[in-house]
Image (cartoon, rainbow, N blue to C red; front, side, top):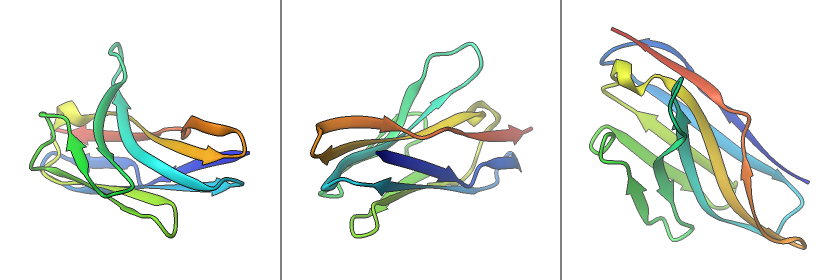
Length: 119
């Protein structure tokens, strides 16, 4: 059983900052890529940022220069530092991880955390 637990969402004014955290726990060998996705009302879930175990990162064009993803391989955690937030960043943010265990390679999702940016 693998669980991803997210924290750090909330309400912030435009231009403000928030930091999201995701921790993987359970029985597994290792965590490969980790990423943050978001889904706004009426829209499809989209990739915000991802980070490989090698620490190579990718970002959606809409967040480049404002968001920073990081991870701690020893702790199986990933963080998303969000600066200069805009109202269009409002969404439920989900952590995703590719986990290797006795079950092979599987993707897991966190429960989601709400981020609301007021104008």
